[in-house]
Length: 58
Image 1 (cartoon, rainbow, N blue to C red):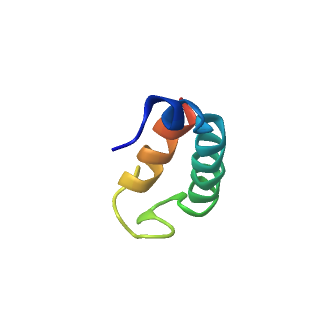
Image 2: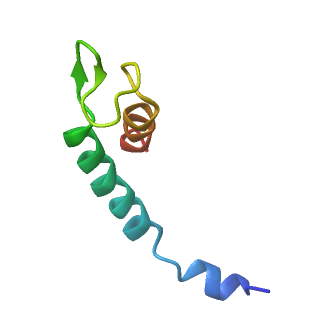
């Protein structure tokens, strides 16, 4: 069980920054094309790009 003190020391900003960095990387590779996403081939916008956009809104 985690104590309240240990939980309050967690650096949430560090986690969010890591998520944001990863989201930018995803959006740099998952791009629209006439046949769908250039990276995964799924219909555009692909789930990965949509999720990355949501992360950047945090």
